[in-house]
Length: 140
Image (cartoon, rainbow, N blue to C red; front, side, top):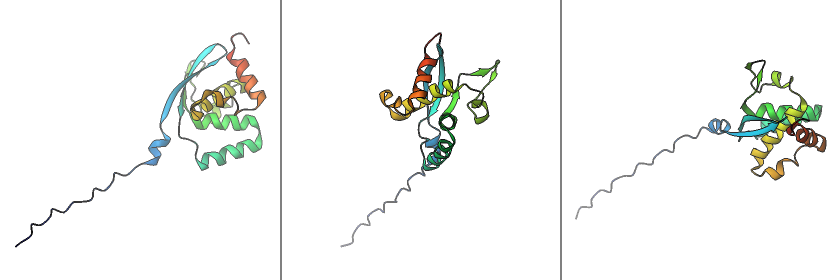
């Protein structure tokens, strides 16, 4: 009695997963600054060991540098211009932004990253929270 050969199953090689693609995922999150709605795209997976090192280095300088580093790293784009010209969220451009704006943008980032807006306000110092809150109020 001759046995039938069982068909051999070829193992499918799993598709390669490009982790760099994950770092490019962004969501749109609006926030208010001085009574104006700002649209910002935020990268949602930027918290890496390398990012933490850069943020820690910036924190060693000052809170303002840390907030700026957070915004530059997290913001893919935003609806700002400088005298009608594009004004992307770069390190150079953020050096011209008021700290109250950067604090408001950082709070928006932290809300996205935390998944819970009630946690984000606890991530900046009290002075930064107050500046961000003041900036979000019209006429202040």
